[in-house]
Amino acid sequence: MTPPNALRDFVDRHERLFVLTGAGCSTNSGIPDYRDTDGNWKRTQPVTFQAFMGEELTRQRYWARSLIGWRRFGQARPNDAHHALACLEEIGRCEVLLTQNVDRLHQAAGSKKVIDLHGRLDLVRCMGCERRIQRDEFQHEMGRLNAGWLDLDAAVAPDGDADLEGVDFASFAVPACEICGGILKPDVVFFGESVPRNFVDAALGHLQKADAMLIAGSSLMVYSGFRFVQAAVRAEIPIAAVNLGRTRADEFLSFKVEERCEDALAFLLQPADTP
Ligand SMILES: [Zn+2]
Figure 1: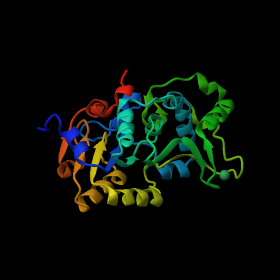
Figure 2 (figure 1 turned 30 degrees about the horizontal axis):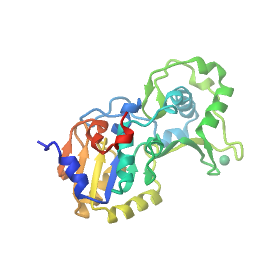
Figure 3 (figure 1 turned 90 degrees about the vertical axis):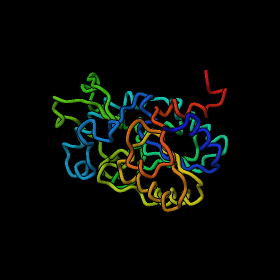
C-alpha cells in the first residue's frame, strides 16, 4: 500500500523532477485514451505512418474522421491535472515536462518547460517542403472543399479522431500543400514513425539534471516513452507514478498512486487556482 502522503513527500524531497505525462492527464478534458487499465488496446490500432503516406484512401479516411473529431478536440480545455503540473513548474520543482500527449493542454495551463515528444495536433506539416500551417486554417479549407461532410457527427475518439464509418471516404477531398503539392500530415508522430532525435536528446539532457522522475497518466506501453524510464533506472534516480492500472514500469517504481491524475496531483494546486 502506498501511504497517503507519499506523493507530497516525494515532491517535497526532490527539486528537479523529470515529469512524464500521457493520456491519463487529458481524459478529464474529454479526450479519450487508447488503452484500458491493463495497458491493452481499447479499440483498433491507430493509422500507421506507412499506411498514411502510402495510401490515398487512408489519408481520405483519416482526414474525413479528423474533420469531425477536431471540432471537439480543438475546443478541449486543461483540467486540474494540467493546472497542478503547471503549479509544480511555478514552484520551481519541474526540470522538464515531457508529454506523450499531442493536445497542447499543458501549455494551455501555463507550463512552459514542455517537450511534445509525439508532436502537436494543432499544426499540419507538409511532408514535401516541411512547411507548417495551423490546423484551424486547414480545418477551414477541408470544410470548404467538403461542405456536405460538415453535417456529419460521430463519437469522439483518441487523438482528434472520430468514429465515422459507413461513408464513401473516396469522395473526400484532401487539400495538398499550396506551395509544393506535397502530402499534408498532422505534425504528430504516427505509429511506425520515429520520434525526432532532437526531442529525444533534449529530454535525455534534462534527465541527466533531474533528481527524480514522476510519471502521470501513462501506461508507458509505447517504447518512445518507456525509454526514459530505462534512462532513469540507469541514472539511479527514484521513479514514482500516478496511473489507474498497470504500467510497463511497475517493477522500477518506488511507489504508484492508483488514482486519476487530477485527484492525485490536486495537492499541488495553488489556492488561486481552486474555485
Ligand atoms: Zn509543401
